[in-house]
View 1 (cartoon, helix red, strand yellow):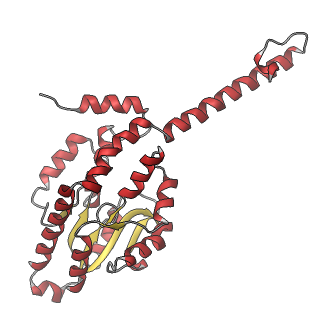
View 2: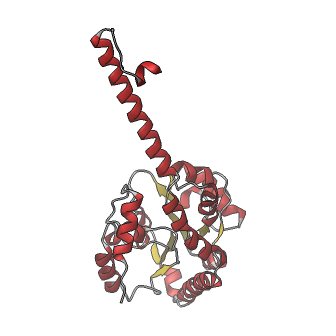
View 3: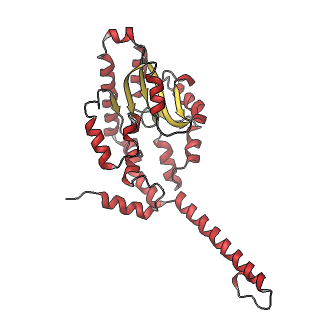
Length: 280
């Protein structure tokens, strides 16, 4: 080790050059490992998630918003005329995470351990089949199924998570918990093709989600202003055809703040958030 740290005398110049290259390589590896550690243990990111997770887990207001959404969904199903059930196969398309299943426990555990979200930590979580129903979700889905409406779960969980998800849904007697009704992510993030697959065979009476991408591809990758404009244009659909469940922990809204530059340094993201705030 001392040869790497001290000047070399009376040895072959080529060997000295080799040692210098080796030292630079070790330094680069050390920096890489350090940056990776910082990314996985980003205190700014972790602290940023505390209040949203606490809102989901402790706020009665969050539960009230969920019940409100599913009560409205129930009303829409009750309003369907009998002839719709006779002449069409009816379906509801719903997202899973933070729409039907509450995964806030996973994020809370990561905060307690000083870790940030990763695909590995997410798979570790879903393999436990330990998520609980979002307030109001179970009663609504069971009611819709009792009326003869099929439920299709279109999720960006990976296809390797289908079995653990079915186990999780069956634990709470959620309807249509089978492979035929699980349309998970194979390659593309967009859900457009999967929605169209259901719509080609069924009349979809409701779409439910916590992310606007759950309703239409037009909301994908738009900046804040574009998402506002598109949301306003669809104002007659909210609460009628589209049922939104609150999620302030994560979502497309978060990516839009950073213009979809997901790998920005934590400090730069903090500056963007600060500059995006509108004061008076």
